[in-house]
Image 1 (cartoon, rainbow, N blue to C red):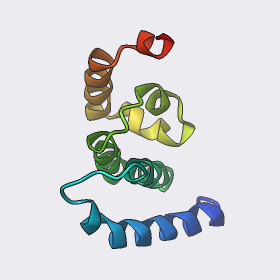
Image 2 (cartoon, rainbow, N blue to C red):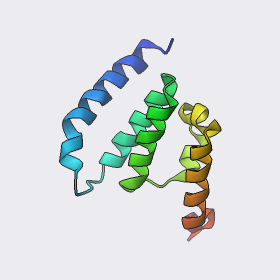
Image 3 (cartoon, one colour):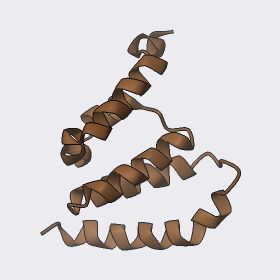
Image 4 (cartoon, rainbow, N blue to C red):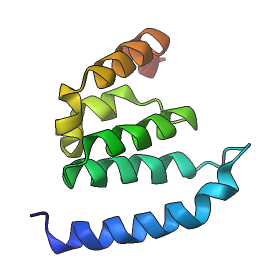
Length: 103
């Protein structure tokens, strides 16, 4: 069972996403992708990898393509076993090589 703090955070994120998702249709605001990535992390911790991956894809679609974060975040550990996660990472690595951060 996840710690109570994760459960509280999950509920807060669920409310924020439910209220804000209609506002994101058709445009991207800077922090939406962080909210989506946070939702993915919490859902992964709660043992819901399919739902977590869907939120991770939303995060990427709205501008957060930070594949090193996805590979290193301990909250996303269970997602790394999903074949679709590997496809997403490969796609992002080819589009955004790791050496771009050194420029």
